[in-house]
Amino acid sequence: MQEKILITGGAGFIGSNLTEHFLDKGYQVTVLDNFATGHHHNLTVFKNDSNFTLIEGDIRNLEDCQKAVEGAHYVLHQAALGSVPRSINDPITTNDVNVSGFLNMLTASRDAKVKRFVYAASSSTYGDSQGLPKVEDVIGKPLSPYAITKYVNELYADIFSKTYGMECIGLRYFNVFGRKQDPNGAYAAVIPKFVMQFMAYESPVINGGGDYSRDFTYIDNVIQMNERAMLTNDSDAVNTVYNTAVGDRTTLNQLVGYIKDGLSAYDTKIADVEVVHGPNRAGDIPHSLASIEKAQTLLGYQPTHTIQAGIKEALAWYWNNLK
Image (cartoon, rainbow, N blue to C red):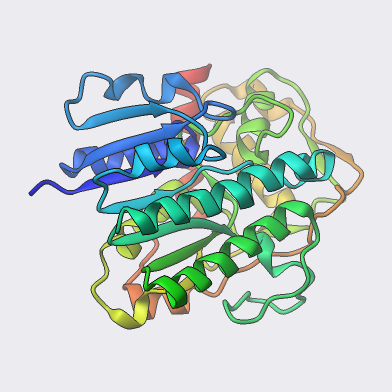
């Protein structure tokens, strides 16, 4: 029997990449999205695929969740309102989507008796924890409303696994980037935003001195982690959380250098674009670096893309699709 996957937030950056991957693998894929942050154009290529179903609905509506999860073997829950600044500006909506919506999806998945619920957790859960690299069982206090919501997701998933016997796996994403990531909007991620600014000969603004560092993680590594989490048969590997990262860190200054150098190969004038520094951003942690040992040991995860390899592929996509 052909297995069915529900991908919530499937019109978004990560969700649409997961949709493409699993359709290519021969799965039936249903996408649930309200298009608050996702885009119809991310799904256009799938519309004639008989294995693809789109349900336009909202995870804040339990009935929409129940309809979407019907017949699903697996749920890959990506739907959320991301962005630390957004959560600071509007904590209520962030909580409604990320906590109430998450609980709706967990409840609907429990009632539908799905095999496994894999969900997007976040490196923001580490909060004010100072230690590097970040290890899954050592976290600090959250530094933003967004971080609180993502930690609550982990708590709910743990309770549902213990109380109802569900199989849940959380993937703590570390600064994911790659093709289809939206460069527009007030809360655009730093990499696509910088790319579009350079291509327009505009000076990108780095928050602070540029010495803050992140474990930037290419989309293909994230797809691999979702697939491994979804399919593992190791009972020790479920009902837990995993860092989803490369295990290496890059400063913002280094990142801008990679982007500028890479784009200058397409257009030499980009080499002359200056970089500007602004104030640090509220809620930001100085440094982030993941230990990926747990994922390597229990899931057999091996990242295929370094930051440099990922940037090269991402720049090619942006240049060919958005220039």
